[in-house]
Length: 396
Image 1: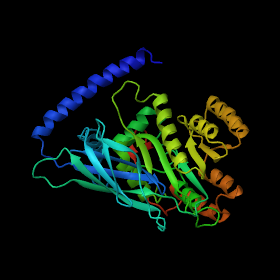
Image 2: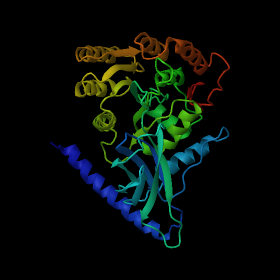
Image 3: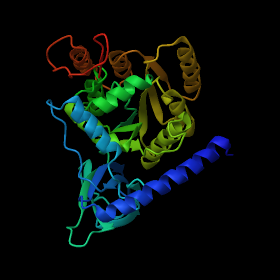
């Protein structure tokens, strides 16, 4: 059923998108900026792949440096938001075994979805390259626009997969405080963001597994917009957090675009696609209390019985009401055959995983040491410069 808010959403959305597309069509006649394709990491198996990317009318933003000023970060944030997408572009995607699939971008230039793909059965690689070529529109006399990306096919040695939230689970984003979260995203870059202490070592331990060489795949699912994919990907590389597909969502102009239901739907669909792609694989789900990860993961446990080994939730809200609601969810998860662990830090979570035999106990000292380094208790890591707010406080 749709209510007045949904109908208003539809009217506002249609009008806004119509005006945007008309303006872009006029601008493209006079604009000679080169088209570009951003290709994101996807995932798949031997017969299918999920591919994601975007076609824009401007060149892509360069990686950050330590010398970048707040003004430059602000400018880059504006460029990401106003990246002149190429609406309804047609692309041809080539992936494994000569398979080619045509896709059409939406009005924001985003393309993606499932495609058939044949991966050589004798291949022992986890990452497989795919190619993207812009079919239309094309500018006369301009070179062919191409891009390339990678899809993850888990190794046969994998014992389980990991699906993790990003904001306030991996990256300190403060999404529970809108103003601080906005400042963090708008005025910072990949080098001014901070990880939660010990995350990189813990995720590496999960990837390695009990035996140390399992190559368990890690997937990152977030309601952050695709526009900041480059920031998140660069951040993870800088922090040495295990590589994996980063599944984000499109920004839109509807009034309810930030509503909890949109967050819930996006993450549920993304997780469902992953788990259906690997029907024989069990998973560990990791999130936090700032949004609706516990509720989403509880739904996943019910939808995929006996496929979720554990749910790890970082308590970043720390309110009595939220803790009580998580406790009720934990009881439901336990009754459904899994377990939900609410923890205040990464080390406690790692100890639980070691006790269950999912990671090696030998990895715990590395998690502890990195936690101290991320907290600035030793000099083994260079602190992110941060952004001054007030009274000496810094936002990551």
